Image (tube, rainbow, N blue to C red; front, top):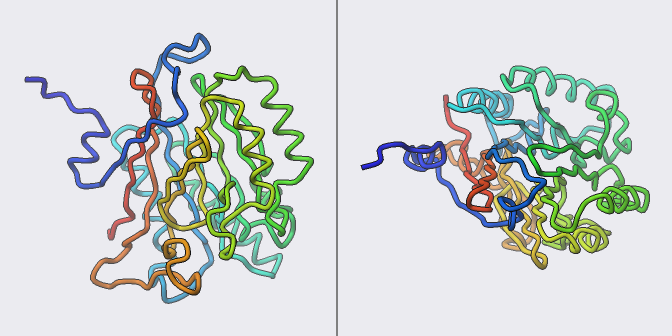
Length: 296
């Protein structure tokens, strides 16, 4: 009997949940450009540092608990990405910078130092990303890791929820350099498709963005913004939203208003969490394991 157990199986046995999606890596193992190694990264989103309110009586604690949880992972991820709304919105420019700096100090405690940041509309929409750029750098960029091309898109700095023509031209030029079977992962904050525009769960020119991506066979999108796990397909492109670290939101259109799900004292931190995303070369798939924020 084989008694070895991989990290994903361990997480499932520990009761942390998990679900596997075969998305974005078709042909990955056979590609001459792909590295031979499996790897995994951690996605966190919507920490809303600076928020105060009844949906989370531990508003100053959940981000720190998430940092501690990531640091406690038995095997460190290759990198970590925060997909927006690092801080809660404020019209006070000085307070905005203060919150962004405090957030940076807190996540500076992460043991893994390869950390990528993206803005959400709470961070960037009131000043077109100026404060974010001062503290974290570019709002959109690319990087490559073990045969996968990663693209971070900014669909929040324009308060009208546009990617914008300039960035679309930049994306088109970047994609033109890649073969059609390239392995591509896109990070955004808002969904690129019309999930529920009535609640601002859409990108005005998201269809144009998806049209640029569709000619590529292996594309997967990870995003935040909606404060819940959601999985959607546009053609062959899979879109996976992440939970929030501050408060969950209701399912799209399930109630008249987009009010946060109330805090349940009997089940604290319910609906909050982050995810482990593993690129499994031999199986040509992403394994997505949802991890909770836990009392501690």
